[in-house]
Image (cartoon, rainbow, N blue to C red):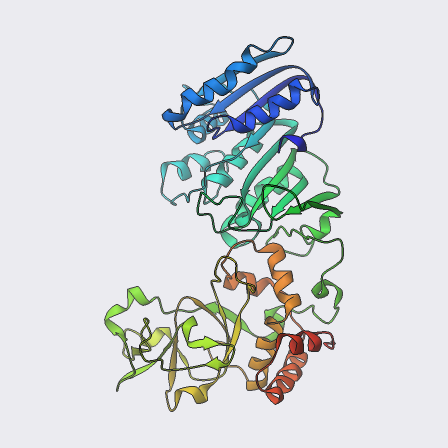
Length: 460
């Protein structure tokens, strides 16, 4: 992280928010002492709210205070960075003044911020709307940075996509240039002690910088033994026509097969198809759930009902219920029986595929008039009704191809597949999907090689 900063001169104003025992500050200061930076003076503001770490942090910085020939000063703030930064930015009567920073090096805390919390309300005072402490710390570092200020942070990748982080993406994209993104491919190693299920990135931002080429590097973990690095135009990082401003992290210089295939250019809206999160939230309707079907119930489908061979229902001995009572309370959550495409919302940590799609075949459910889709499934439908059969099969075949999965992983670094993510993807035409579905229905159980080979034949 310290190695991403360009050389500088004059006085460096360095911010380390969530400093811990000072490891990141030490890495930065070591580079300065070794002559990689040519600052005449470094002034460090280190924030750490855990009082048990203040002593070790001070001990880490002590040796730099005594280094001959290097002018160094530090302030340790044993207080809440968010509230202190917001007060300084908003200029409240009793706020502590914070001079702008030329550099920031961050390993911020990872924790959700409730919508009515003191942190959320404080951040809104300075125009920051975000849902996690890590993105709040980065946004505040940007807000406190001088023009040309350099910010390097190691954070989960979840901000790169999804609706909840859209205001944060807007905030940083409007105020900074992205210079470098480093992706850790493993979700279990770089943050192995913190139970973080996202892939992790190191991002280098420049306040008020002119956006240009972005360097993207990757490694499996923090040993960097398999480091690779490429440069990309910014329009491969944030697509110009993407209203959500998803941040993509291409891991090779070659364009993905999805980008290269001009037939894949349609939105779900173009196709007349919608995708929704399964509306049945089981813990909210517990009194209506039944372990097995009985008179007055309809099928309730979970991810566990689907496999590569198709849907199996009911499943005796399954931990989840197989049915839900049909009544005035549940009717609004149910869909008419028909052909649907469903995609699991969650994959396990190191699962090979992120997108796993399956066909819902009405013949599996006998004469059941309605179906319940549990909240851990995404459902493709037409105005809450089923799809024509070959279209459902074509969607499933397309979504299960390797190019789609690889493309999806470029902008989705966590284990969740949201309906919004699926909505913003590009698809072949409705006619092409139907043709793909007719072919898939003729094959029976498809292999990965078969559907990947067929992908190459898709045309407009």
